[in-house]
Image 1 (cartoon, rainbow, N blue to C red):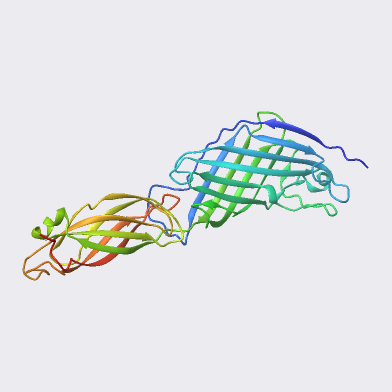
Image 2: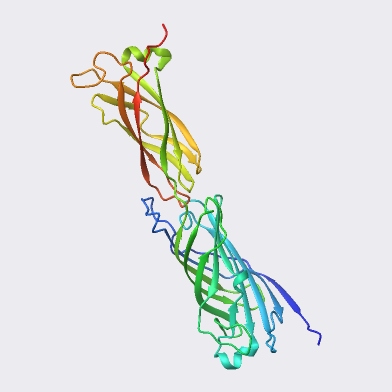
Length: 333
C-alpha cells in the first residue's frame, strides 16, 4: 500500500523570558558540586513542520511527527555573564492509535532529535531531552509519555548533558525539564520550556611557572634596593579562565614590601596556557631583616593572588607562591 505524506511548514517568531539565572553575583564555587541551571523560557512563536504519518508503527500505528526549532536570546547572567542564546529542537510524535487506550498520553519525544542548547561566544552546552511521563503503548508502538489533546502537548522529563563545545567541552550533568507547546500550524503557537539541574565543567587551576628577578630602571634600582620580578603563571586546570586579574601581592618575608602593581587585569588564560607580568619589591635594611648589608643573592618569598573566573563567569581567587633570589651581581656600570 502506498503511503501518503503531507508536510506543513509554519514559521513562528519567538519571545523569550528568563525567570531564573544560571549564575548569581560573582562568588566562589565548589566545582565538584557544579553550577545550578534554572531557566524558564516561554514564547508565542517558533519554526516547525508537521509530517503525516510521521513514524507509523509496524502494527498499524499512525500519527504526526511535529518538529519545532525554538531560538531566542538569553540575557547576561542566565548562562554565564555573556549574552547567550537558547536553541531547542523538540521532535514530538503523536500516535493516533494510542489515543483510545492512553487517556491522552499518546505522544512521546523522539529523543535522538530532541535537545536544548545553551550557547555563547565561548561554546555550547547541549542538553538531551527524554520524556518520563506515564507510559502507554499499543502493540510494538513506542510508549506514549506526553499528554496531547489534539492541540497542545505537555509533559516533563529529564535531560543529560550531550556533546558540548568550546570552553564547555568537558561539561557533564543532568536535570529535569517541563514542556508545554501548541502543535497547530500557524504563527501564534504558545510554548514554554523550563530547565533545572546541575552542570559541571572543567575548572581553571593556577600554578606558578617561573619567577625571574632583575634590576630595573636600567640598573639604577640596585642602588635603591628595589628588585623587579617577572612572573609567568599557568592555568594547569581542565577549564579555561576568563578575564583573570591579579588581586593582591604579598611577601611573608620581613622587610620586603611589594611596590606594585597589586591589581592588574591579565586577560583570558586558556587551559594549558600562561601569562607573564612584572612586580617590584623594596628590600628593607632594618635589623632582623634579610639583606641588611647587601641585596645580592637576597632570598625572599612572594605570594600572588589571582582571580580565575571559569566559563560560567564564577569568580574564584587562587594563590601561587614563589621564592625569589635577587640577582647575584650588580648591574654593569
